[in-house]
Length: 217
Image (cartoon, rainbow, N blue to C red; front, side, top):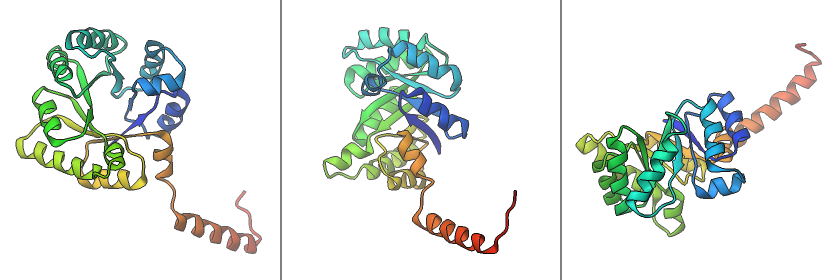
C-alpha cells in the first residue's frame, strides 16, 4: 500500500519523504488555508521534491469551470492529480480531464455507487472518506472493502485512495482490505511506529544495559 501524506505543510512532507514514507501528497482547500500560503506557490514547491502524485483541488462547482481550473493546476507539474468533488459536474470534469491524459482524484466519496460512477468516468483515484462516515455512525472501512470488491469484480483500474484516515486501526485495516493508497496526516503516519510493548521492551533493555556498565562508543 502506498502512503500519501495529507497536508500542505512542506516541512512535514520533507521529514517523511526523507524516510521514504511518502509516495505522494494530497491537499484540499482546508489544508491550503492551514498552510497560509498561495495554492500555486506551495503546490509547486511540493512537486519540486515529490515525484509521486500531488493532488491539488479545484474550487469551482460547475463542470466547465472545474475543467478550466484543473488545466491551470495541471500546468504546475507533470505529477499533479487534479482533485474534483464527487458530484455530477465533478464526474463530467473527470471525464474530460482524464481524456486529456491528466490524473484525476475524485474526492468526497461516501458510497459504493459513487465509487462505481467515478470508475466509469475514468478516475485515476477514488477517495472514500473513512473518518467522516464513522462520525455519523457508519462503517467507513466497510466502504473501502465494498469498493475493493466491486472494482475487482469488473477490473476497474481506478485506485482506491483511502482518505480521512484518523486512527492506527484505519491504517492497518486499509492495508488488510487492499486499498491501493492511504492518505493520512503526518501525525497518523508517524504514530504507526508506536506500540506500548515496544516502549516497555526498550525501557527494560536500557535498564539491563545500564547494569552491565558497558559502552559501545
